[in-house]
Structures are given as structure tokens and as C-alpha cells.
Amino acid sequence: MKRIHILLLVIFLLCLRYGYSIKKKRSPNNKNRLFINKRLKYINSKIISRRKENYVKMKMTENKVKGKDIIYGNECRNELLKGILTVSDVVKLTLGPRGRNVLLEKEYGSPLIINDGVTIAKNISLKDRKKNNGVKLMQESTNISNDKAGDGTSSTALMTATITKKGIEQVNRNHNPIPIQRGIQLASKMIIEKIKSLSTPIKTYKDILNIATIASNNDVHMGQIIANAYDKLGKNAAIILDDNADINDKLEFTEGYNFDRGIINPYLLYNENKDYIEYSNVSTLITDQNIDNIQSILPILEIFAKNKQPLCIIADDFSNEVLQTLIINKLKGAIKVVR
Image (cartoon, rainbow, N blue to C red; front, side, top):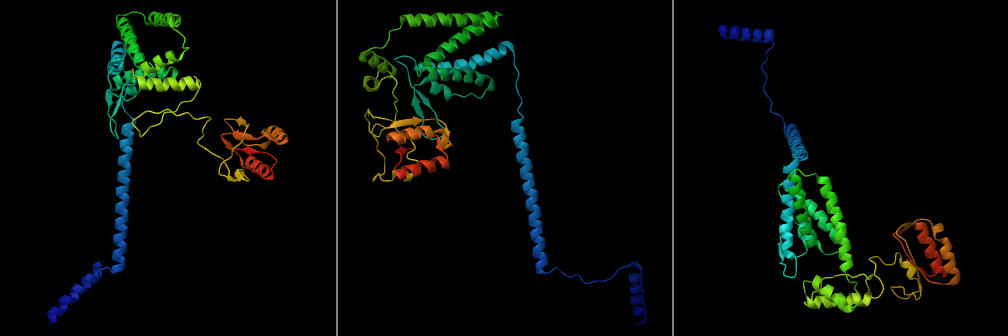
């Protein structure tokens, strides 16, 4: 027993000398454990979110910094010509009275069957970026023809492709492109003058009917509808096309003009006893600007208030000052005005 006590005493002295102690390990309580788990989850979520942000930034940088292919000379011209001819080969199928229709695939919805050159050109896109630049040139050409004439886009595409092909062939043979360009411009002026001299002015209903029928792919019924509309309304009239649930095409005439926006304030209906205003022999003030200051239209209002004449004001917008002034005068009966 003495030996055991001596051994324990020696071990105790050694522990005191070298700083070791025997302690009972205590497990953390539930509160500490929950707090540690929450902190670990928070740190993990932050790390994951930062990794995602870095990945997205890396992908965006890769998409922005795309390499550019630089090509010159015959290679450049030939690649553009391939894109131009691709559009021309598709569009020229719709040209003439025996032209075919083209089926266009849509990302959403059913495919579109059409024979309009400008619409077909807009829906063509090539994977090869070099050739796709030629496609964009053809799209620009057909858009200009559609904006100026409203028709002839298929003919424009075919002539553009033919002139471009012949011009590139000459340039590839080391001919100077400047005289070729000047020759094309000179020839175009001569052709335009010749066409004007051969053209016949449209004077009768029969002339309108023939043109409308040809423009409608020889659809006589549609040609008659278009001819009747232009014969009654004139060339400066506005024509709106709407989808009709009926299988038959119809023509409706509407007197006057309709605006998407109505009366700007319900107080203008005071003493009207109905939900609309009807004036006879009304004068109209139209502007494409905002009316922000009542002083800008005060001289006009004084004239109509003095003569007791109704006035309709059509503008982009009105300020609160202008609106309040007009409403007060309308309620007092000083002026008949609507906006």
C-alpha cells in the first residue's frame, strides 16, 4: 500500500510540474449545439452562394469576350454572297403568279404559312456568323423596299442577289469596285426613268381592281374588297386589318377616327347625362406634345369661350394645372371642351 501511495504521489507531482491536469470532459449543452449548427449552416450557404456568383460571372465573361474572325478580300466577299444567295433562293420561290408558299417554324405556337418576301427574310438566321452578315444585308434591303413601297420585297431580294453576285465576280477578278458602283448607280437611274415613261397613271376603278387582284396573288374576291375600299375612301384613307372569326372576308366603313384613349377626366361629362360627349361642328386642336402651361392655350380658349363654340383638344398629356383650369371652366359653363 505504501508503494501505491508513493506512486500516486509521484504522478501527482509530475502533473503539477508539467502543467497537466485531469479534467472530466463535458459535452456542450443543447443551446450551444444549436448555435454551432446554425453558424455552420450560415457559413456553408455563404460559401455556396459565392461559388455560384463566381461561376455566373465567369460564364458571363466567356459570353462577352467572344473571339472575332477577321477575314479580307475574296474570302470575305464570298461568305457574304453565300448568305445573300441563301435568302434569295428561299424568297424567289414566292415570286410571280405561280409563286409557292413557305412554311416558317415558330418557337411558340403553330408554324406560319406565308409568301411575303420581307417576312421570310426576317425569319432566316444562319449559324455561320460570316454568312449571317449577308442575311442581315438582305433583310435590310427588303425592309427598305417594304417601308417605301409596301410591296415588291421578293423582287427586291432577287435583284439584290443578282446585282451583288455579278459585282463580286468582277471584283474577284481584280476589277476596280469604284467604277462598278458608279455604273450600277447610273444604270439604276436610267431604269427608273424608263419605268416612269412606260408607267400608266391609275385613274379608274378597273385600274385599282387589276392592281389589287395581282397584289393578292390573283385572288379576285380579295381584289374587289381592296378596290372597293380605295374607291370609296381614297388613297389617303386609313385601312385597318383585323382577324375575323367568320370564314368570309368583310369590309366595314367607319366615319371619323378612333383613339385608344378616351376622355381624360370624368368631370368633363358634367351635365351630359350620358357616358360620352357628342358635339356638332366641333373644332379640334391637335398636338404631339404635352400641354404643361395653361398660358400656351389661353388665347385659343378665350376665343372659343367668347363664341360659345365647342373645342376638342388632343394632346399627348396634360399637366394638373391645365386639367384643373379646364374642368373648372367646364363646370361653370364658360366653355365647352373635351380632351
